[in-house]
Amino acid sequence: LGITFAANPSGKGVYVSALDEASAQAESKLRSVCLGDFLVSVDKVDVTRLSLDEVLEILDQAPLVVNIGLQRGGSEPWRAADGLSVDEMMAAVLKRYPDALSDSDQQQLYSALQNLKGEDAQPDGAPDAPTRGDAPRSATARAVE
Image 1 (cartoon, rainbow, N blue to C red):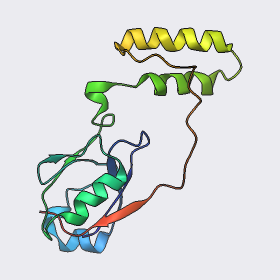
Image 2 (image 1 turned 135 degrees about the vertical axis):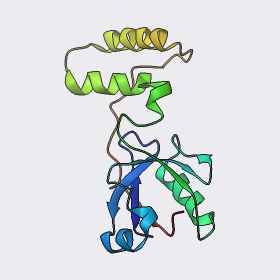
Image 3 (image 1 turned 45 degrees about the horizontal axis):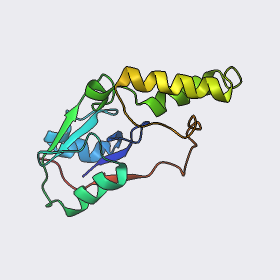
């Protein structure tokens, strides 16, 4: 009912990307919702690490009146506990300095970042920078309690 969600830049979780002002004014409970708010739960189910498609599936299966939890401000909610992944850090380094590291240096940096994060997986090679997929999808929720 008047709220449109879109995927967070990381692909984990969703945020309020648009509000239908007429619906928000008509529904007093929507007046406190702001653009950019992070959706953290749907009927007490944590959605901070889910993709947009997974969140939309939960919303599609939810009753007509649904309780949502929102967080305003700060970084994406899942980052508070997890921080950036090794792949995200490598992608940022390679984007900023695309020709600065040899393949061997990339592998060494990847291993060093894994050690810092405490991850056990060993890469076959340094990861490629993430590519942009299709345009982000969004959906409008039906009702908010």
